[in-house]
Amino acid sequence: MARNCPVFSLFSKLSLLVFINLCLYSLIEGKTGGFSTHLIHRDSPKSPLYNPSNSHFERLHEAFHRSSARAEYFKKRISHSRSNNRFSRSSSNPFRSTTIPADGEYLMKVSIGTPPVDLLAIADTGSDMTWIECKPCNGCFNQHFPLFDPNKTKSYRHLLCNSSLCWGPGVTCEPENKCGYSELYADGSSSDGDLSTETFTFESSSGRKLRIPNVVFGCTHKTGGGFGETASGIVGLGGGALSIIRQWTESIGGKFSYCVVPRDSNSSSTITFGSNAALSGNGVVSTPLIRQFPDTYYYVNLIGFSVANMRIPYKEISNLGNSFPNDTVTGNIFIDSGTMLTYVPLEFYQKLESDIIKTARGTRVTDPSGFYGLCYKVEKRLQIPKIVARFAGADILLPPNGTFLEVYDGVVCLAIVPVDPADNLAIFGNLLQVNHLIEYDLVNNKVSFLPIDCTKYK
Image (cartoon, rainbow, N blue to C red; front, top):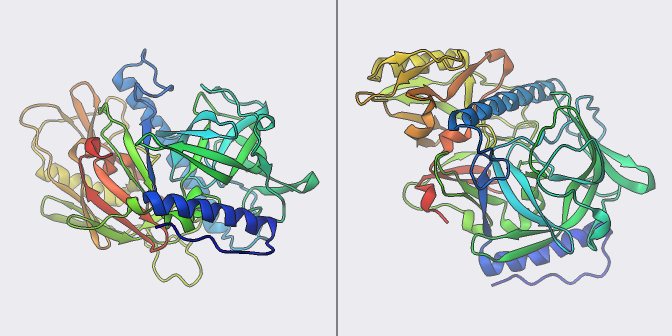
């Protein structure tokens, strides 16, 4: 049953915004348990970014390059955060970024405004701010949908400077008391615009339309640098204050989940918000979410990997130096939906590769590009050992079709790559998340996993 909305007499404009959202979300949550919608892989024929003239392997190699560029961005942002811990409004931030360039792996259909305008945005756990390109826009990148025009919608409002959300890295106060943002990315790209509120409409997997008013988002009016042909913007699913997950915490209970299908599947992946995202029962394992700075990323504690019966302890990056005050445990790897590959420190990778070689049966070959360290010829006698990722409280059997990937015709390579330990970077990428239903619970601070055939999950 839906909860009753409280009676009030006088609220600030910000309180009124929150009040309206909570009332509406409470009704949605009470009646439906939340909602689910589809995620479209950008290399799927269902995606407008799909290029039919490229071969399967060409698309795969482009995805590898995106993954590497994304990892490089994270490395620079995390490095800056370690040297510039920021916990107050007054902290300076010369390297500004709460979002990433619009380059990820999964797309989400969303409609914005009144009347609604259809857009396709990247759903991204590595970004907080939801943003789209708006008219007028100077230097906007190519996209497959018309630019959003805030002058043609009845529900668009500028966020004022006195809003509790008008602060943080890259956020500015513009003339006429308007809240703005200016983002500078690690690759030299930039994005500038207004922080605003607007009605977002999502189409659930059941076909229902769900209208959610007063979503805070970035309306971009200027971009520069290396933005290429991409989607209309980003839906921020990170852990920071501007993320839609944080904005909707009271309505969806701080919960969302997704189920990633294999790359060669014709099915769409699914993302769920609200109580229906909660996992319980046989087969579910959970590990604590650990707050790091920046709080965008979903850090967990990796104990190690197991290859067959051999255990490889994970001791690198035991202290990133960017924990929140009073935290006693630090995370050493974060889970990311938009990074394809998994990145681990070199020494750990070498031990992992060595144990795989000891237990695998097959013919080793060299990666022609020199990017991958461990590759095998595809043949009947090829046998890859069982590999398990051991998180604190949760052992995850890694999917064979995500651990080794056919990167050339007749050649499979390990989709885990090494990084310099000095980079303090470790990412659990989406290939290792294939065929797992993964729940993020930001209220109880945990991530849960359930092995499942995601092609059959709706």
